[in-house]
Length: 127
Image (cartoon, rainbow, N blue to C red; front, side, top):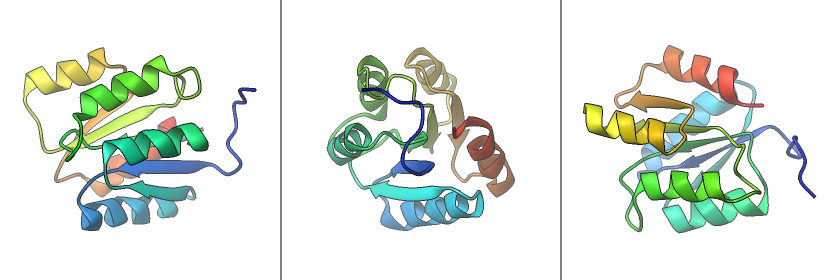
């Protein structure tokens, strides 16, 4: 049965760089949300399906699969289709930004990120 709420408003951060993942997690906590981490795409998809997050923060360059592919899989799965995805990546060229929009991302942020923009994005999209 699908529900609009998770057991706790949590954010799943799919980022292979452990330090960046944990740094983003600190901002997630500052925003008053729970934090879960995945260091690769397959783990991120599994965690998102096991317990639907309020929001996914997604890197595009992961060791096992492309972030655009993950975004598409999240959008096509009824369990995660409505979960907002925020792309957080070093890829700042127009083609990647357009692909982010095409795959259904709610926002596209680039690294290095502005902490205030990240916090505002978390507050805007996490439900």
